Image (cartoon, rainbow, N blue to C red; front, side, top):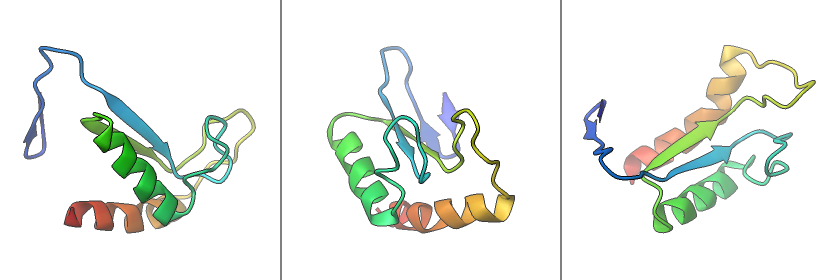
Length: 86
């Protein structure tokens, strides 16, 4: 499977980590809301074997408020810029 410039071989199981950068995440209680915490979390997931990282910026918990496009980009931008450098 090709994603952008990366080839992922899916002939064996692939580990995907999920990092929620929302203040009200129902799965982790918002522990990765701050960019510095999200980057530490992502680094740990990669260290533990994750080949794919799903970074979620909008909560899907029941009753959550939808984000504007601008707010979603505001949450993702600092993380993506720092990951791209690594």
